[in-house]
Length: 328
Ligand code: NDP
Image (cartoon, rainbow, N blue to C red):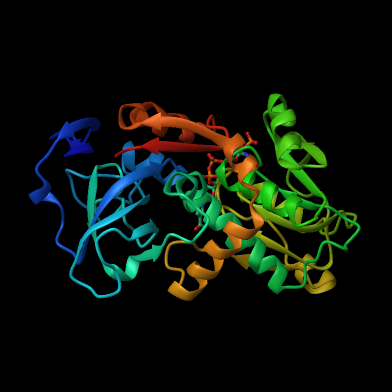
């Protein structure tokens, strides 16, 4: 079978290349899946490259997401022919992942492909889109509704999380303000449903005061760092920010004043260890609330051979929307 194998030299340098490898090298687990599609997330960029501290052992097959068809199963929950999705659980980091024609994984890590979604569409969503949906659900659970006059802010908007978040929120009737550092992507973001484009520089500086004017009904933040600190000062009374990513850095140079004087909520979003029931709920919501024509507009098609370059591109913030890697 073909796989993107990352090997480590004696001098500690990693190299990724497509190779033919024996199926018997796959790690031991309950379910064998013939992979049809995978994708490229920020974390994949790290695992295709130096490992970013995520990869445990080499040689390694990255790919934190895949969708495909069950080929063999030791567990009654799946039988050959079932269509499945895998995201998270440290697959593609600690366990061999989706950049191969086959994967052997634990039953608990899989979810059935929801009716109405193809394996290609599922990977256009991938971890990035799944996480965007979790963020929308968390904001709703904390009182966000489309009747608020202020827009919902999406940072890192032309990336994977941001693109899907923009399309879902717009489809649900929210006004969406999309933050981007790439002005050329304004048309793309408006097509996804953004009603306002916010230049990255407008929010790039650290907050000058603990509270700014109440501008955003809520926020899905893929950036972190000073941008998140700034956004917190601009959220309406009782509003929430779903903290998803750290494309702009892991620090949070903020004060607690927005929490204390405006009742602002900072909601952490983790896609990797999400319990099964919430995963199924999120995939059902994706099928219902993400317009498939908007998803199609985000897709950049790719093959296994494109992955070394795409991995480097995503780390530089140069990927737009969602890469779909055709595997089998
Ligand atoms: P992408 O690279 O596709 O998107 C990130 C976007 O952020 C870029 O496209 C760019 O958008 C913007 N950006 C990049 N660098 C900077 C910067 N220095 N300052 C401000 N904005 C920047 O990645 P994903 O969408 O896949 O992931 C986004 C983040 O979310 C990552 O940090 C990732 O690790 C995290 N993540 C977390 C998950 C979780 O479970 N919590 C799951 C999935 C992802 P633009 O050009 O429009 O400004």
